[in-house]
Amino acid sequence: MIKDIILNLEHDKSRDSVRDYAISLAGAFNAHLTGMAFADGTNNLVSLMAELSSARIADLLATEQEVARNAIERYDAAVKGRLSSVEHRLVMQSFVGAPAAFSAMARRYDLSVIMQSGNEKWFNNDKIIEATLFDSGRPVIVVPYILTEEFTLSRIVCCWDGSRAAARAINDALPLLKKSKAVELLIAANGKTAEEQVNRGVEISSHLNRHGVRVEVEIVQAEDIDVTNAILSRVADSSASMIVMGGYGHSRLREFILGGATRGVLATMTVPVFISH
Image (cartoon, rainbow, N blue to C red; front, side, top):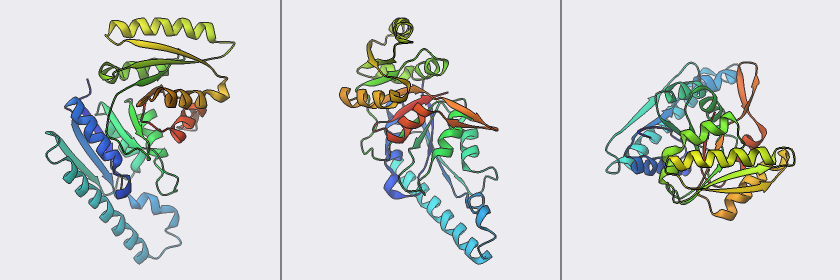
């Protein structure tokens, strides 16, 4: 069950649609919702401190703290009367940075909700998404910055390739799958793996049926470099309201970076993506 959700609050009012999505999601599951805002400017300004005066740094930190407080105020106003169990957290300085702090906090929740990075460089949540996906041990819903609708589950497209990450994502998403009006298992097959993937798809469909989830299996032909386009095309054609997929990554020193298909979907998605690692 989903009973505890944490939301990364956006500083900019124009991106508050992720807040409204999280509120409606929490309402659908009668879940507790925590809104978390960071005024973590010290970490962001380290590289600039040699170039800026102490007065300028103080002004920038004060501005960041003010916009974080404003985000908390908008959150408190938005949840009033809509949810019975809510809280907010304002982090003035985390020392380890917002991505690490948020991912550590997310370990104590069932699910995190984070907005997709925007086209503008100052709306960049990639590090928070990566840290939460690979370090929290919990699933994440990434909400498109273009989304204006609240939470709905008309059709979920589950990406299936038989991997550990895909299995984890589908298992974590079971509460959502059970609520959805329709669930589709999407297999992007090619000449080398088609038969094996189809067999695994039949088996995972039987498993989901035992949980009361009726699944439609859809097989599309797509080579590795075309997987992202195949997923997004199918989502558009089927008017899906959510994607469920495993989160893949590559180790880089002590960090993980998103793999090609995962990064491609998160960069160009038009519906929320439920993702697990």
